[in-house]
Image 1 (cartoon, rainbow, N blue to C red):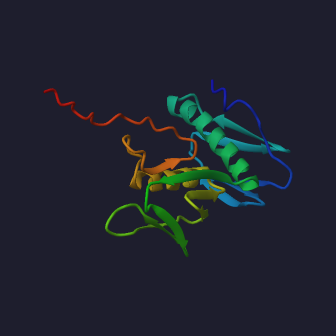
Image 2 (spheres, rainbow, N blue to C red):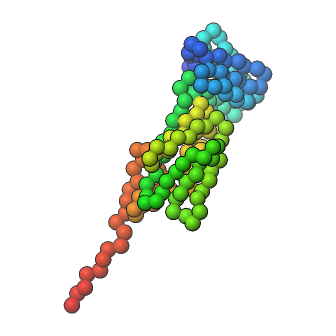
Image 3 (cartoon, rainbow, N blue to C red):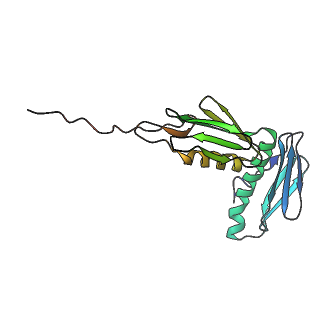
Length: 181
């Protein structure tokens, strides 16, 4: 039995949840999110709470029960307060700027790297910190991970893109040989 799935999900004031045969839509002050439902999971809105339950007793239904409960919780949280990921850019000459719907990164390559921002994700750059916000937790996390993957922090000097607060263990590097005469 799913510990996450059996708990009822509270709907805060100002949030509207609609469930149709195969989709769930959550609308709030931060936007509208829609997700397709799997046929092995049933979602019911009862007053100011949501109950997620498996359809049948299959292994797939049990596995998706808690997963969809977590998705619904994240959708409700995202339309009320946006999810935020912060990336820190380390390195001499490394910089970022927002140009319309694109993020332009100078990462020590011979050319600037231009990344298109997904729909529903907002990006701001202040000094060497890139702040990614949005209502959809998956889009925010995936975009942050794809930007970080462009230049992961290297272990010798620590240059690259890292999550704010991420600790990169630095290696010692080469030791200078002492001359023995």
